[in-house]
Length: 136
Ligand SMILES: [Zn+2]
Image (tube, rainbow, N blue to C red):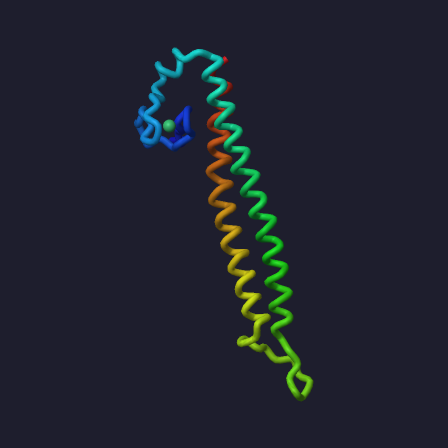
């Protein structure tokens, strides 16, 4: 079954749950049917706006992760240094390798964080667009 969300605050509702656990708004079919169309649409558009903001924040984190990946790879290349006999050797105790690990960790964190923000916001957006279409 598809996930349902609270119309007022956008909090996910558990299966069969009508009253929101966060804001105590009644999300029953009868309550939503009886609601004023203007207030109903206002709540739907408010939720869609918050979905868009979350999506934009997620995209910003994808950009940050891209920059962090490039910087991490640059520092990885820089952590291979020439030794006294002019041979390139990997130096894991160098500052370059430390920055490489830092930027690659930042890349991983940003990708995971952005994905965790983007995926629920897309399903939430789909849900509220369906709610808007349902009541005309
Ligand atoms: Zn709620």
